[in-house]
Length: 555
Image (tube, rainbow, N blue to C red; front, side, top):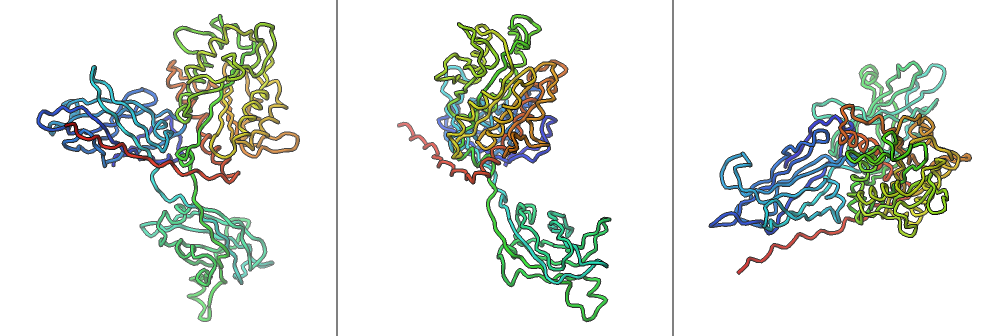
């Protein structure tokens, strides 16, 4: 099983989801004279910065077949916020040489990891090409999230007759949970709140990933220390007990009443019995769903674009304009759109993207609009693919008059109206807004964001140009949740970044776009999960996949 852990400076330190890719081929070219081909598949991954293809791994060689189902898998780290380009080369092995160029090339195909995951049932079939005038067959790629312990345990404890540790009052007890390690050491994994001035505390229920508690080993020792909290941090040790996940999973019973023992007191006092008892009041386990669960279950990401057409961008025909249509390179608006859109489009099966402009005067009567379709079709604002959005954007620059003001609320409300009609988890909406300046309708925009936070929707705002974007930080609720008229947003759904922070100093547009996409998309999976959890939406079962039948041999 091939796997990779290469360090990439563009990647965050958040643990990646492990995806296992299985490979099959059908109708490969037959390169051997007296038998069929002996195929092997070589996977190459493309570096984000240099765009260099590096060999990732190889399947085993299966002899004498044109329709191999390979056993050896590729295990890849999945980063939603990146476009992870993959190349699968197929060869016929006809010697023992490890040099792949010494073998017969049978064809190749390109895709992204997102394309495989986003396909129905996580199964993607691609045509092999690369040999002129020859039909090279197909490759079938299947993606599955590696099974690991994704359960969450929720439990509650109380204690009875704990030792009194405070001179002027009773104890202020709290619990500390430790997971045992293979070498006999312990790692802290949870600490309860402190319950003040009582020897019979009842702690609040808490939720912990099972893997944090026992790393998936249900019989591994879990040690629990009981302390009396002191303001100066020198907490007094009351006692300890041990258990295991398997014992805890029995729930409330006589097995889950634990004596709290203090070894020092036990060694000194002959009549010592215990320092109190701790009782498990309740225990519940539920599965922790992932972003991949929802995508494999059919959830589609609907991508909408909104572009700032206000006059502060400058005359599009002038090189100083942020909308300047340089024939040799993309402007900042097009770069931001392409960077984000090319990743999200892998998770949208129809590749139809609504695209709007705001802050322009429209022909023929010069009416100001803050949500006009770039393709001029108000009944169907969809553009086909990211290239279609770019074409509509460039065409709009030729026909509308840049004007103002910079109003965000109309477009946000437009997308929210559509999202409000689909809250069953089958679709999640991502709105990308690209702007050069300060929002004119901040009060209305905050109201729109608060309303949208209850819907399956996220908003990405990219600021282009040299303007100060301090006011935008109000909408990005990482530190302080957005509010409007006394109502707090249910979720943090806005991500704002200034594009200038991501521009590569050497002028490498590809690197600039990759950095931007990584940061603005990194929060989308968690935002999707927070919506699904808040509404109690479960991922649908992944559609059953059917393996392509092995063709009958020709007579």
